[in-house]
Length: 453
Image 1 (cartoon, helix red, strand yellow):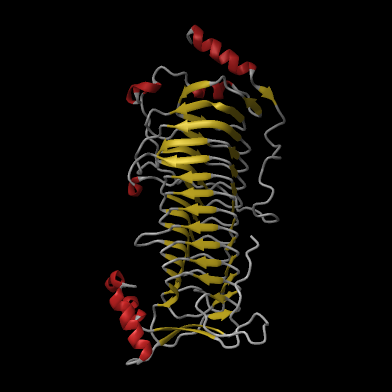
Image 2 (image 1 turned 90 degrees about the vertical axis):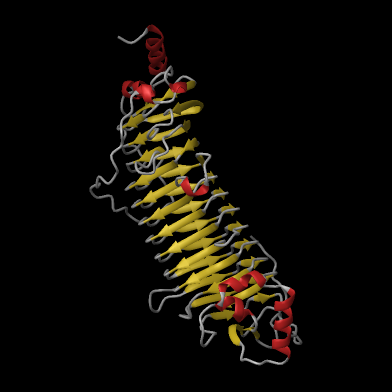
């Protein structure tokens, strides 16, 4: 029989349960993610690694005296609102019925550093205002703060910390993730888990979240998702897509990460109005493409990164293009770096200023396969005699001594050193080899356009 204090706690929780409309009412489902498109819900495949069970004595001593949150969940009728009494509770928790659980920012659920804290295994549920903490540290069982295994759920206002993985969606569609604060365990970057992971999850809205001191935010085999107004700091990949199509990424801010946004084997991805800065280090890159195609990169601010845009065999699909419009790419080591000469990249209306090298074409042979038109180049040396805002002569960027460090990576250590600057000057003054064309803009902007976003 439950102890008297525990019976009082359960009674207080039951008094806070307010019956709402049936679980079929999905008014809180995403209204913009993948609008007009249907999800491929289908039959769920059981792909999770088996989760080990732990005795209470195996969990950290800090949670052993805490009330069990699972009892409150089991006592709440399906389709109701559960407002638990403020305080700390013990996990793990499994929710397999449509509930609204509102912690109002005053409820902590702690799993005592073992396993996964919370499993949401239902459709049409809402989690709001909870603090989830204390997962295990095993990557083999994907120890996380929150596993989502259902559709049409709303998860908002959660604080997630001291967990290996943050929020993990597998085969979960039409879910809203909004205004959550996520960080991993305080360990080295390489052994952290992903702050937010989507796997075979479509038509979700990820909005207003903050992911800091984590590893990656990833979307694998996941399509038609919207990432909007999120912030990523001090992680590895701010956002990493793989085999993902038709995703929208807009108005996000990513600072101090190794890589901003990386697109692998993706198509029809739209990046717009994002700010990516200080992606530095040996692999630092603001936006990267790997064998990806048919995407738009518009109105982004890319500043103070090792590489602004890196492209490897992209666009990959025949007869497709990647369009860069009205981006500001400034004060990076390299503005655009292409490792192949497939062509198909179209850049117009961009601002390139303050980069050590605006464009680097790593492949050898004919340059100029990519299209440049109407961009602003801060090192343009022509005139605008008719004052139409367009340079009278094309902008042409050639590789002189740059070819040394492009072709011999270890020579990058000496880039912009006095001896390299002298060699570059001599090469331009009296060429002893033919320079290679990196970019040609037939209509360069003479005056830098004002930024409106």
